[in-house]
Amino acid sequence: MPTRVLTGDRIGKQGRIRIGCSVTIFNDQRDRILLTRRADNGLWCLPGGGMDPGEFMEETCVREVFEETGLRVLVKRLIGVYSSPHWLVEYPDGNRVQIVALNFEAEVIGGELKTSHEVNEFGYFSKEEIEKLDLMTNHHQRILDAFEHRQEAFIR
Image 1 (cartoon, rainbow, N blue to C red):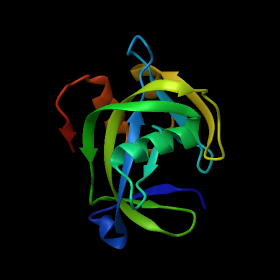
Image 2: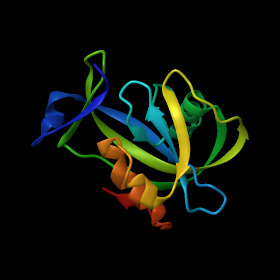
Image 3: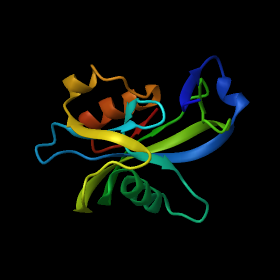
């Protein structure tokens, strides 16, 4: 079973709370962002993942981006905080979580962009191109917010 996002009225009650991050990496012109295609479900998303005990959130971002893409990043700013009691992420191992996600902007400072066991494809996409991709449902708003280029963080 692939990772999937379930929706329903207060479905989050069926899981546990998990803190996670996603990371927005813009190209030099700031008109495209890096997305990865998940190996487990074929959906496009921002790099990121769950926070491990004993980590700073910044460490989570750096670790997840490197694990998924091979890139070394410097976290620059918080774009937004996202949660919904109406979404539940179900993982292949049966774990179900309501995610509280923080989406950060980061800058590439090293590494080499490559696939991994979690990611089988990647690319930089414009806002218009992203609208045509098969996205993880819970990443769509994060991506739209990132393209707003606002200084203050969104709370959604």
